Image 1: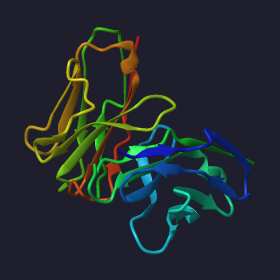
Image 2 (image 1 turned 90 degrees about the vertical axis):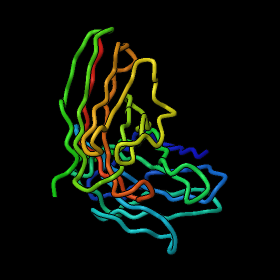
Image 3 (image 1 turned 60 degrees about the vertical axis):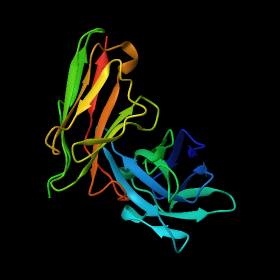
Amino acid sequence: AQSVTQLDSQVPVFEEAPVELRCNYSSSVSVYLFWYVQYPNQGLQLLLKYLSGSTLVKGINGFEAEFNKSQTSFHLRKPSVHISDTAEYFCAVRAASGGSYIPTFGRGTSLIVHP
Amino acid sequence: EAGVAQSPRYKIIEKRQSVAFWCNPISGHATLYWYQQILGQGPKLLIQFQNNGVVDDSQLPKDRFSAERLKGVDSTLKIQPAKLEDSAVYLCASSLTSGDNEQFFGPGTRLTVL
């Protein structure tokens, strides 16, 4: 089974500042990793995913994440945030093979961008 | 391309009442998922369909929850009778296949049980 820990429930930041949202996972098998964004009263939207290859993954809206196998982390970063980035962000993990293909989600991190 | 549609968007009921949610996935998507998202938590899978068959319903509370996807397209999720702890957002998602790496989510139905 896989599990995901999002270490921060809330991250306040000022507009145009950089941000990092932390995600750690545990799994006994190799994994795929995902970041989703959820705007108020909307469903989840895929930001980016790591399947294989380069450990630095670029996604939509200027976000990127780095897969670190030794630290079992997949932190999300953006060099300069906008007010419109205010949303809930979810990290998710699923087995690449030999396990359940159903993603396990973290509890979410609320990114609050102040003007 | 139309996204995943869900209705109603909001529902308020009293405990012990029944409620049903409807989901229409993206056209051509064989796999459909129902998730429960309790406030402050990430989504938790309730049930996964591949066409009109159930692939995984291990986390569905079968004494009160049921779901069907009779024609392999749209789906309904029912709760009967509802409990206070069922208050949550119910998200429907779909993907091309069960192994597909991207799920597309609907806007959800926010259920409040009083």
